[in-house]
Length: 241
Image (cartoon, rainbow, N blue to C red; front, side, top):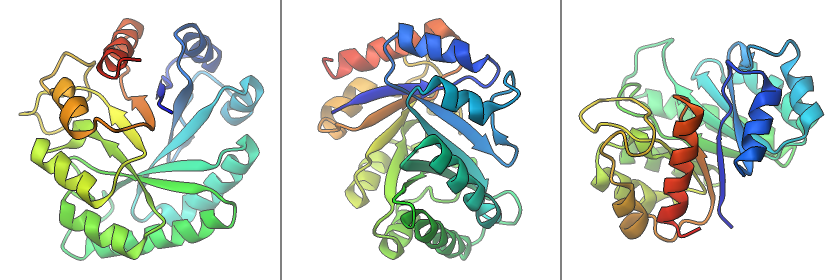
């Protein structure tokens, strides 16, 4: 069953984000995590606040390839406290130069994470990158990662694709169970715009490529509340929801 969520805005009090989600019939929110922890700048105790409101959430952890072993134990404690059974990791590589061996290092780090999460029955989703941070971006890299880690799940960020052929080739390797959705001007390497403000043809994608998708959709849009709501309406129209 398809469920639509959105990225909780770190610059708002969490209680306001919960109200916005409930008022606009979002079924869950994505929470941003990085080396500084959960990104909720207006809440002094963000983890306790999230627990208090008990609204469905999923954590999206942006981790450098050399941060996995430090932060995964911290994430496991947070996930257990919040009662989560899913984790998204968006891998980046800023601490070292990316070369042909980097993808194998990432694959080994993913194996470590899977082993840690499996102890707690937590499912891991790995997100594809754009060419801005070229790791886990090509189909060859995807094949390497998923061959070594068959239990790994895939979250597909459509705004990170090179073109529609790239999109099709990725889902031939692994069908995503979660989508990150935002628009982009395809000549721009990396950006996330409200649906309709770029030139990604979502009507074509959801009619011809991902027409059988029935998982979670996360809107990665923070420009304005109106933009988030309008983007949700467009997605619902594409899927006749």
